[in-house]
Amino acid sequence: MQYWLIKSEPEAYSWDDLVEKKIDIWSGVRNYAARLHLRAMKKGDLCLFYHSGNVSACVGIAKVVKAAYPDPTAEEGDWSAVDVAPVKKLKREVSLKEIKLIPALADMPLVRISRLSVSPVTEFQYHKILDMSNDK
Image (cartoon, rainbow, N blue to C red; front, side, top):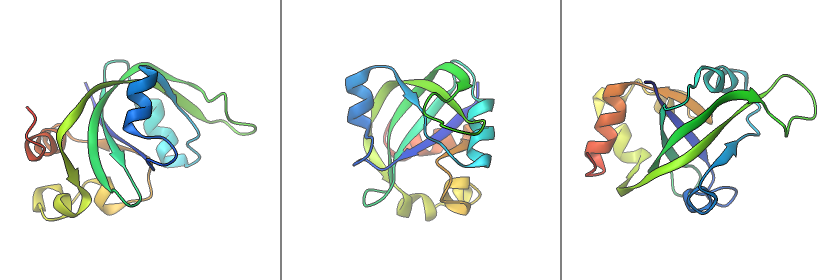
C-alpha cells in the first residue's frame, strides 16, 4: 500500500463534498508531477485529504477506489484522474503550521513543494499525521 496527500480548496471541493458523494472522481489536475503521482495510485491506497487556502490542514482520510484512467474533464492533453471515497474524518485537523514544526516531516512534498495538489506521503509521515490528529 502507498500513501498520498490530495489537496483541494474547501470552497471548490471539500471533505464534506466527498462524504456526501461517497465516491467521486479526483480530476482537473493539470500539473505534470501531480499527474505522475495520480498514475502511480493503486486501488486501496490511502490519502490524507488536505484543505488548502485559508484552512491549510489535513482533515480526513480517503481511499483510492479506482486507479488512474483518462481524465474526462480534460479538453486537451494526456491527463489522468482516480476515484476516491472517504474513510473517515480526522478527530482533529492537523495544520500546515503544525506539520512544519516537526523536523521529521520537513521533507514532505507538502512542505517543500506546496503547490502540488497530489503528492506522495511515506508510511511514517502518514502515521505521524494520524498521531498528531489523535487518530490511530
